[in-house]
Image (tube, rainbow, N blue to C red; front, side, top):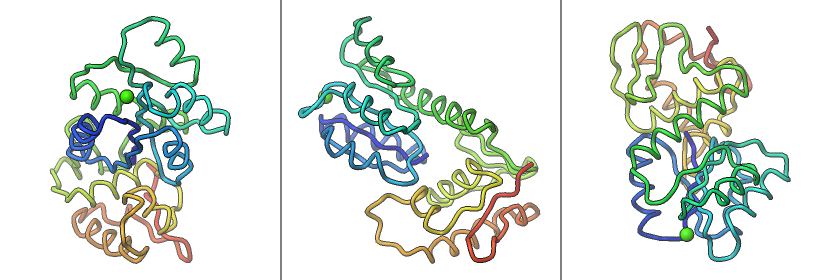
Amino acid sequence: MHLLLVEDDPRLAELVTRLLVGDHHVVETARTGESALELADGAGLDAIVLDVGLPDMSGLEVARRIRDRGSRIPILMLTARDAISDRVAGLDSGADDYLVKPFAVEELAARIRALGRRGRERTGDASMSAGSIVLDEAGRMLTVAGRRVDLSPREYAMIECLLRHKGQALTRDQLLDHAWPYDSEVTPAIVDTYVYFLRRKLRGAADRIETVRGIGYRMAAG
Ligand code: CA
């Protein structure tokens, strides 16, 4: 998933980023509410992990403003206190879930997977598969007709994006926004290279990644 992590504590931000990147997520980071609101407008984001205690405004305010803009992006709130009022306020402000600090990193990883599922349920398809291609999010593993396929982190991000938006034609720019960090110095042509890599690895199921003339690519549904 392409995530935005909003956390002002640099050590915690670094720790969580490392965990999330290790879990094959693409991660943007922000340290203030202001920069979070700027980045939250970016294309291709799948979910936001939002600390309540930020230097310039509360995470609750950030969540409220994101919802006011009409965005339904899943938000996971990080709260420092296990106070019921905080949790209620967090959910009232539009967050989908919350996690109390200190938390186990495995717990955060599991909650983010759950957010991803919820986001897909909203668009009507919770499964991360297409025909014989199956992405096991918990095991971070792709199988094609039961055969395990080893992927580089970028290949993983690409196939995850194609499966998440299965049946939709995605432009090269959209694929770039979803699967690469915003500050990457790459051009949309890199997408063709990675589709080539993926098709080679998918062998029998390679035709599932369809070329959509004049647009880009689509993962065939079903
Ligand atoms: Ca904080």
